[in-house]
Amino acid sequence: MTEGSSVPQRCWQIDSSRKGAEIIRITDADGKSLIRVKPGVSAVIISSASFLEVILEEGARLELLRPFLLDQTLEREVSLSVHQAKDSSLTAFMVTKGSISFKDNVSVVLAGEGAEVSLNGLHDLSNACEAHSLTLIDHVAPSTKSDQLYKSVVRDRGHSFFHGKIMVRREAQLTNAYQLNKNLILSPEGRVDTKPQLEIFADDVKCSHGAAIGQLDDDQLFYFQTRGIGREEAARMLVKGFVKDVLLKINDPLLRAEAGGML
Amino acid sequence: MLNIKDLYASVEGNQILKGLNLSVKAGQVHAIMGPNGSGKSTLSKVITGHPQYVADSGLVDFEINGQMVNILGMEPDQRAREGIFLAFQYPVELPGVPTSEFLRASYNSVCRHHGLEQMDPIDFDGFIREKMKVLEMDDKYIDRAVNVDFSGGEKKRNEILQMAVLNPRLAVLDETDSGLDVDSMKIVAHGVNLLRSKRNAMIVITHYQRLLNYIKPDIVHVLYQGRIIKTGGPELALKVEDQGYDWLIKS
Ligand SMILES: Nc1ncnc2c1ncn2[C@@H]1O[C@H](COP(=O)(O)OP(=O)(O)OP(=O)(O)O)[C@@H](O)[C@H]1O
Ligand SMILES: [Mg+2]
Image 1 (cartoon, rainbow over the protein chains, first blue to last red):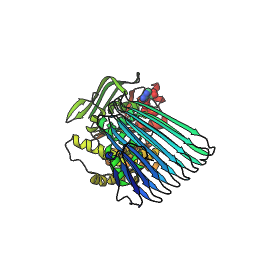
Image 2: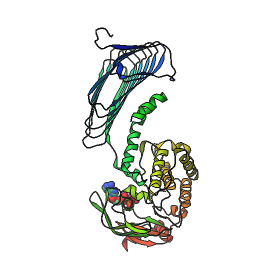
Image 3: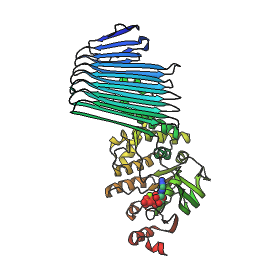
Image 4: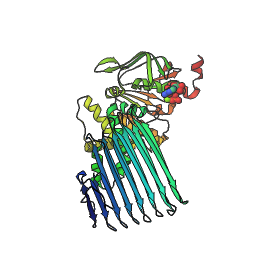
């Protein structure tokens, strides 16, 4: 898959389970990386590689965190492309904080029967940051499952775009696909665009999507205040509460701590 | 401790309180009764400073450091740190905010203000469990998000738990009894009574004399169309229970 590419690529072949004690870290210096998880193996990986390719072989399991602190001056474009074989499982978290615009292109091919993916995003945008999350889940094989939860906290003149496409091929009967995009806007200039797209060619599928855009609620803030808690601290606690369910989906405690520490 | 003089207040441009006077001294419990929509909750929101409830004229003076201070310009959190508490008629849900964290943030911000020592999570956990025992609340509420998936009665108990944590000088209890079954009401009233002292005062808003059997008021007021139309002793509550408000409104 790397032929013809001018960017050097580092490959990680994971063939024994590391039971969470050891987490593989792939830094951005690696630029373009390929992770291949061998059949039946479980792995936990933190990667800030800009372009990441993941291959999950039969029954392989991966919990993946992609953290990006966006405080350099350049706009960034990053991507994740995943190919999943039979009964493999991926739980991925994209976490960003900062003021630099970025675009994240994610594509997941559920090629083998029973493959499952949980794709999650947490973005804390400030200044004039534009965040584009583009996801494509391709349900190719039957009995595959996808579940997406993307949440953005939009501050200042931040602008969050979410474009989530779910494709269910004719052969992919008994697909289960779920997508949810939630946004909390903290400033009058903050903006959100959210667009789900479903292309379903099989007839026996369960597919649903939802989106929500909200602001801090006056009655909630007042409730905090009557307990002696000022508006700023109240807002911090409410934001923490807003992102919490995504963090709780992270199984590995070290991974969860790392993601939580960013926000 | 609290002195409200000729208070006019509006919500969304509608004047709800129309010349209300109320004076509460340390050590007293005042009950406020009155028909639906008469302005009881509005009064509680004006005392605590909800931004939507605007005082058009009049005074709300509260004793701070031995002096009566007009609190109308103060933020709700400042008022709370000075010892004003509201047990909400409709407690607010805070998704994702654990009850323990919320209560500790609340307790510590009040302590900080008064230059007292703050509590770390471990000490606070012990402190809060004691209070919960008094209110016969299950430990599981500590980790749950504030009021989320609490039953109506549990929410009301949680309000009194917060009151117990803050031990306010002035507590306004807005229909804390509605939604409570008889046994729960006794437990909650017991919790409230433990907090009664010479140095603090309470305003208990209720529709039912039953609560006042357990939390005995010194003074009972009837609020009607934005002003207090009758003030008396505990017997006034009994008469209201018996005869309703017609006899007061017509006279
Ligand atoms: N946020 C609000 N927006 C608009 N109108 C309001 C608001 N809050 C209260 N009101 C109005 O003010 C009036 C007084 O309401 P309030 O809640 O103070 O009554 P109450 O005496 O507490 O009644 P209840 O016994 O039913 O609790 C009502 O007519 C109500 O509709
Ligand atoms: Mg009311």
